[in-house]
Image (cartoon, rainbow over all chains, first blue to last red; front, top):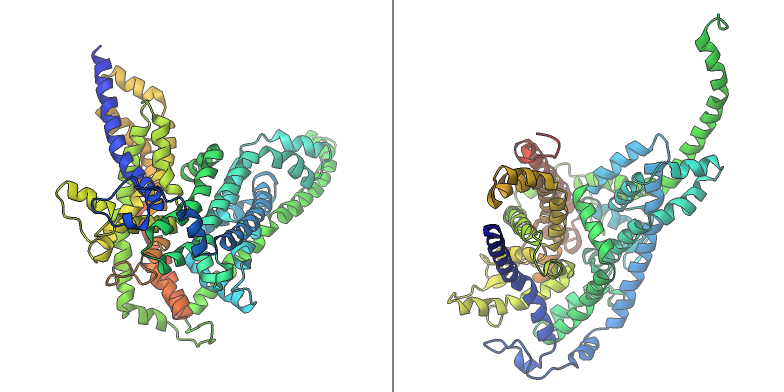
Length: 277
Length: 316
């Protein structure tokens, strides 16, 4: 009896805290959507108005006219697709070698992978830029996806751990039956690690979609801008037209939120993984 | 002698498969190497070579336009006399030292609440996670508007409580707290990690504690928090590395200027400015190595303290 009351009080307190903090986490979103639907006359009201007097849906198509949204979208998608194909081709291959093929190099290579995971991006950023500059690829999107085809330490690590967890009998059976290594890999192993591949793809898609520093360094021609670069130059050019910026903001953020709801499990798995092992 | 030795007889039948196993070994070595080849090339092209060149550039006045010349430790010496360099180090340490522990406190606190079996748990979890999905550039714009000194929502709310709102990003004393506040908003991914850590704690411990008459607070103090320390430790390290490298938020907030009064000039921003605005690639390379050393030092420091406060399950 006493226990039940104590628990009810505890739960009530928890709800109270969660709602209070929840408001802090939620209100920027509500404010974003609300501002994106306001007429410009209602932007600078005091006290601010939560619900626009008239819903100006045309802010959305209008915002598209403020900057070449579809060009930026196409550019971003191009980089995202190529980089995602790159990591999906290279990383599981390498991870399989590190986890399942008995050879001398697997251990030192794995150690090196762990070390490189910790290396700050800035240390290699400048020499890599200089190389791309020398071969004339600065100003193209190649530097933004080409490295993906040569593996990325975090994904290799993630997939390696996944491969390690699969039962050893799998490839032994294949090897005894005389199946070649590429065949065991493509027919037995790859299909089994679909969930981990989905997580890798998801992380890369989000990584490429939201990347700012890479495009900032490598792209100078506005015709090649990504959505993130476009959004940031939108901000410098039309800094006071908050309703337009917010409308553009919603359109650029929404795909990620939708993606999250579609493949929630793969998302949480990836984040959990990055934190536990 | 070989005949009389029983061990030798057993060796012979093994001899044949051992030659087969050596071809097997060779085949495996070849496949292992071939499968790992993309990454071996990646290590050479995108890690080893750039690392070596980065050390070399840091001793030269290299810029893209000009091959530059060898200056020895010149860049490093120049840095020690560079005022903005020191400002950027102080700013970055200020930001890191406050934002990382704050994010851990908020993240663990919320994860503890979200781990309770209460109604609406799923909705709450989604709510706290979503902001971490917002791209940095987008969240910059949202917060510039929220923190607008005259028309911003934050100052409106403060006004309701009779607190005069500060000028936030317009004031050199409030700009870093603004940045820290924006960081707290994106704490959702860490919460997911803490929740996973909480779910790894065996129920038996709590049951045993209850038998001994321990209350909620004592269970939290003596079971939950100690067993959460490995996850907190991990987040402390990753958070520190991330905070030291923070770039996109302060860069987009200030259009790369670090204003007001260089108060948002974080280390990597100044590095970027030197490399790509002033094209002082050698100077910026020296900065990159100093950053690497600072990060390595901080990480090592956290590792050293590990014995005092991190408890791994199964160990004392």
